Amino acid sequence: MPNPNPKPELRYMAEQLARLIEVSVTLNSTLNLDELLRFIIQTATEIIDCESVSILLYDEKRERLVFAAATGSDPKRLSETPVPLDNSLAGTIFRENKIISLSDVKNDSRHFAMVSRHVDFEVNNILGVPMRIKDKPTGVLEALNKRDGNFDESDADILSVIASQAAVAIHNARLVKALQDAYNELRAADQLKTNFLALASHELRTPLGVIIGYASFLQEESPSELSDHAKQVLNAAMQMRVLVDAMTNLNTLRSKDMVMYRQVVPVQQILRGAYGEVKRLADAKGQQVTLDLPEGPIPVKCDPDKLTSAFVNLLDNAVRFTPDGGKITIGAKAQPGEVLTWVQDNGKGIPEGELKKIFQEFFQIEPHTTRKHGGMGIGLSIAQGLIEAHGGKIWAESPGLGKGTTIKVLLPYLSTTDLKTMKR
Figure 1 (cartoon, helix red, strand yellow):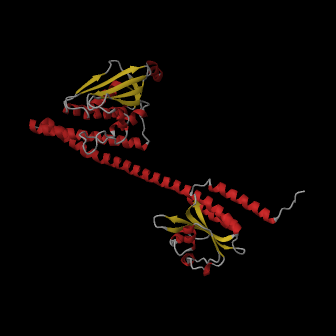
Figure 2 (cartoon, helix red, strand yellow):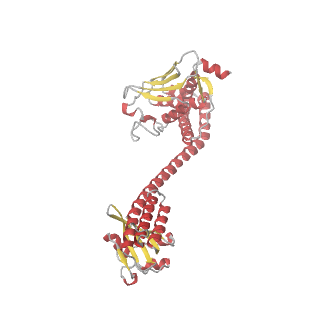
Figure 3 (cartoon, helix red, strand yellow):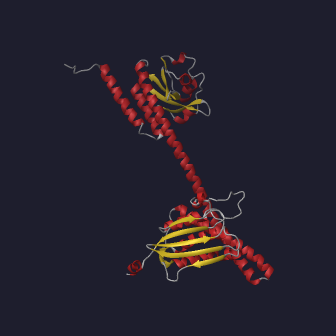
């Protein structure tokens, strides 16, 4: 018949095992480093029944141990006193990757008394175990001042189990924190870039308006030679305005709070409006622009300003990469359930491997040190964002370098039935 009252030792072992399982579960479910460190020292202090537990982690850059946490101590004050690998108990535990238990610390020459004086804590006896990941020490877990007697072999076994699990948990928490810090740095850099785009586009608009106004006046009123100079100034200012508009649109897309004011308009109106914005640039290069548009209106529901801006970017791209005297075609046609539009040129063309990359922000096919064409490499990415905001699709087709490019856009089509429904 089983004994209803098991021995106290067995009951104690069962309780300790239950606590260790609880510790394991918590350590594997906590990724916040500060919370993790507090849990380790508090739990180890209770299980080992000692006055204090401290965690020292190895600083690879400075090759020394640094206090990460300690029961009842200020972490900032502890961190002010790093522990050397030589001439210290913790350093010996770490270097030799072994357990050390001492009943009288004061008589051991390896005792690093500076820490005790700094935090005003007297150490009498100590149990220190290495924290390992795959047999590689990453730090030291110390239990200080056993409340009842000295530390024994059972305490060493329990503290070693906690140290092993804690080492892995701390490593994982550090990785997560490093990822979070890297993400925050990227987000801050991205925000800085967004702020710069907003400020630059805002500050450039007023002087550009003045330049365009005076250049237009001089071109119309001045003698032919001066008029030609004014024309060059005007063309340069118009190109700059396209860049400013591009920066403004990119900033709007980045902010993710773009408001759409949708109306039903013929797609022909959008395309003609976009052509009007870049006509001066095309004329300056002697390019022939053809509008291949059907006579009957093809209605689309869109924000006219934003959709026009998308096609301005497409046309500006075509003008820049088409040689002087080249040809550009703007076309549209209705298809079942959608409207197909395109901007075709006989310009530089695009290698097959770059057809998708051209829609990435700041991507340039030409190396920045040798490229001959201007632009910031954001026009197509802006066009893509604005078109996708309208529920459309955009892609590029090109037979290859020197064979021209066609940018195609699909937009949702409003049928006659849709229009009648909207009017009711």
